[in-house]
Amino acid sequence: MKRGIGYACLGLLLGALLYEFGPDGSSDAGISSGIPEPVRSTMARLRSRRPFRRCEAALELGRLQSGAAVPFLIPLLSDTEDAMPLLERPLQGSMMGSRSRAVRECAVAALGQIGAAATPVLIQAAGGSDAEIRRHAVSVLSFSADPPATQFMEGLLEDPDPLLRIAALTSVVQHGRPGKSEAIRRALQDSESRVRTQALVFASAESEGWVYDVLIHASRDADVEVRSVAVDRLGARGDGRAVDILIDRLSDPDLAVRQRAHNSLRLLTREDFGGDPAAWRAGRGTGR
Image (tube, rainbow, N blue to C red; front, side, top):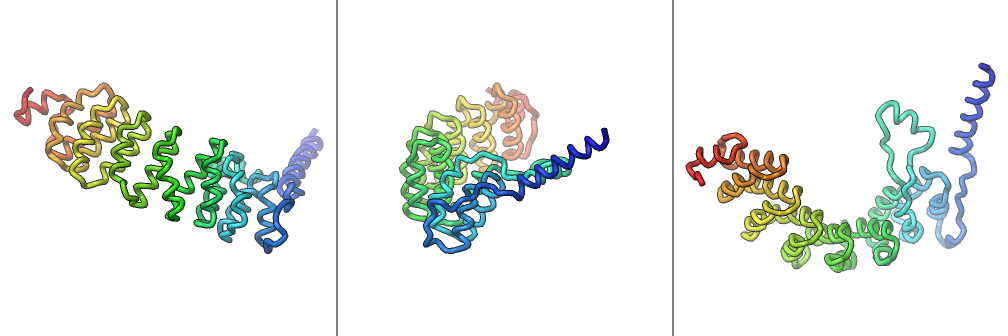
């Protein structure tokens, strides 16, 4: 019995070692012979059956800033396999929990390191039909300061996909593109609450006079998260005009909004009359 268990354990160990270190399907087929080593051999590992090897190869190509590798990295943007080596998983899980990531995250990191050389291929991928590849290509482009990338991102402000609209707005704001304020204000009217929430975060960082009115309007939004962000930012801006609006929000149907309104009131007034709107009105002599 013990011998059988020993053989079984040995077989599992040998299988795991073969998986980790045996032939893995890496291939340089279709890769130009004019590409120098070590780029060529690293690109070949992008086709490995081992997810962790695909991840390692992608990250190495990013460090090498290989523009030639970009078309081969793009398909990995839809690769959701776990990039942690098989033999590390039990140890990671028992000691500190999994700290792995999907292979596509390695590809995103690599494409970001390659920079402007990746822009044309990323733009092409962002216009394709694969939703996952499209979203991750846009994610990389949104952080690029390359002019063709920032111009392309502006064109996505009205994209049907709300996640791409958020990425486009992020790009316009962080790169200070012309029309930034107008893009934020349009996004505040978006039908998708996630877009409105992100636009509100960006708006609250602006100093223009229109921001106060935007926050007041958003404090009455139909979406809980939008209202929560609005009442939180009203307190952070330190504008005493918001007190009466925040007192009204103490009656909000959502507990999180009521709590944030209370915190904002304490921050603005340096007073605390609890969570009852009537107590605040009485305490501040504004009973209505």
